[in-house]
Structures are given as C-alpha cells and as structure tokens.
Image (cartoon, rainbow, N blue to C red; front, side, top):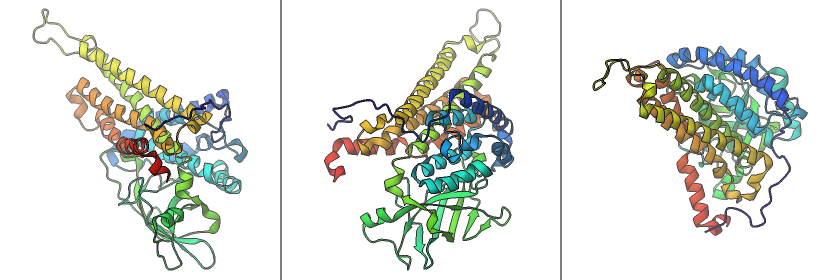
Length: 430
C-alpha cells in the first residue's frame, strides 16, 4: 500500500497560513462582534426562512462590523486572521443562523482562495476595496451538469482589445445579492469561441477571474449578465443562492488571476474548512436547543409508574445517553476541525502526498457533516412530535443540515480520491 507520509517526516516550524498575524487580544474584540451579529442572525433567521429569501437587512449589519476584513493579511489592510480564527467566527455566526451564515461564508471562502492566488498588486486593489469600502466578494463556480470535478463549460472568449467576454451559466450564486466583487472560473477559448480539443489543453485553459459585479435588484440585469431567482430549496432558505447567466460579461486582462485547477487545489482549505465551520456551529445550536427543551420537558404520569406523578425526561436513560452522545460528537468534531486548521497553518500537510491534500483536509468537513445530520435527526427523535411542526427550530435545523451533503468535497468524493490514490499511485502520478 502506498505510504501516506514521507519517511523523513519533520513537523515544520514556519507558519504558512494566509497571514496569521492577529493577536489573541485583538481576536477577542472581533469575536465579540461576531457574537453580537450571531444574536441578530438568530433573531431574524426564522422570518427569512419562512419567506424563503435572502436576509437583506443583514447586509448593512454585517458591513457595520470589522469582520469583512478578518482574514485579509495586515499588509493589505486587514486583520490577518488565521484559518482557525476565521473558523471560530464562522461557527459562532452559524450558532445564530446557519442559512444566513452560509451566505456570508462565501465571502470568507473567496477572500481566502482569491487572496492566496492573486498577485500583490491585485490583492492591494481587490482586498483593499473590501477593507476600505466594506465591499463583499462571492464566487459562483458550479454548473448544472458538472460537480466539483467537472471542467467548466463556461467560455471566456478573447477580445481584440484585450480581456475576455464570458458566456455561460453558474447555478450556485451564493451571496450575489450582497456582493460587488465576483470571482469565477471559465475556460478560455479561441477567438471564435471554440473550446480546446484535448483534455490537457482544456485543463490548462480553465482560468480563474475576478471582476466588478453590479446589477439592478428590480430588473435583475447587469452589464453582460442577469440573475435568475431560482433558489427554492429544502433548507438554507435565507442563503438566497441564485442562478447567474453570463451573456458577454466583460473581464479585463487585469481580472485574470491564474489557471484554475493548478491554483485552486493549493488553497481549497478555505472552502472545505469554512463549510465545516458552518456545520460545527449548527451542531452547537442543536445541542443547545436540545438541552433547553429536554431539561424542562415532562411526560406527565406515565403507564406503569408506581406513583402517578410527572416524569421528567431528563431522568430517562435514553435521553441522558442521547444528550451525552450529541455533546461527545460535538466535542470530537470541534477538535477535528481545530486540529486540521492548525495542521494546515503549520504546514503539516506538506507531509501528505500532493494528490491527497484536499481530500485529507476535507475529512474534517465530511466528518462534521455526517455528524450534524445524525445529531439533528436524534434531537427530533428525543424531543418528540413537536419538533416536526413547521417553524420549530428542530425542523429548520433538520432541513438546513441536509445542505452539508453537497458542498465539496462530500463523503463519496473524498473517499474516491483517497481510494484511487492508495490503489494506483503510479498511474495517478503519470
């Protein structure tokens, strides 16, 4: 079997996170802002879950905090927050409302990914706009026929005066209602719009871009694109993830960041670990709400009792074990996420085979995702029929947890990447 660790393993001492220069004291100040914003998310979350629309009032509330620049390096005007510090903020926001947080999580993901791939000049401009103007960044990448591993069919057609015009459709435009900066991927074609013929050329031509993004919220029309309000999901209603159709959207030459596939896999921890943070925060909320209900609930006088008196469920064996199980799952997941953030920050992932870097980082997300779904189901079972009513927090958490199946990498994708490598490493290297 192929080794998953080099023989001359040494734990590196250098810090290779995005910046990781935020002191504990300064982080505490920012975390207090996250706690306050989380409470606001909790307050309005039920209304926007019911409306099935993006929670528009949160935009100004979010911009009023210093959290937009949390993970931006200090040399570009940000706070220099690490992966772990950003993860803690995202989890705290998710405790308030997971759907609203899932939307703003896209900003942290794209700041991390784009910031790790852009030149200093690009970072000074684009991340500078986030810091100075309180602008929000998002990144639609998924296409209808393609999962995470599918190459982009969206075309970037070169223009005579320079730059490209983008044509195609992205189906998961999370945070489009609040953002003014877009990052996305498209495949560069010839001047007639023909995609490359070979697989190798196609991979090399798939590129990562950044540009201004503005559209009329009434007509949904922008310059070279329009938004289709298609979001109608099982859960995560307040996320407001819509379809974006590009029909000649212009990106100047300065908007080219890098080849997408060769660049993205080196920074995708910002996606995987931030998604994991969403579901860790949800686990905390599930546990909190379960304790709140089950510590007070009584069954009344039950059949078989020797004395006709109320029976508190907090004294029933399977309830005690169930709450203990949920608390244990949360604690193990918390340690898994925090340790993964720390290992990536310290550069311990350099000791993994390159092909396994992303699926190994993704284990934190898939593990937490599987556990949050189990916890929401278990909570509903223990709380009883009241949890099945629409509008109850458990019903909403149960629906929202299902979204954890879809963000990359999901469990099936991760196991496939790992299994392929372990069974045939020589072929993959070729």
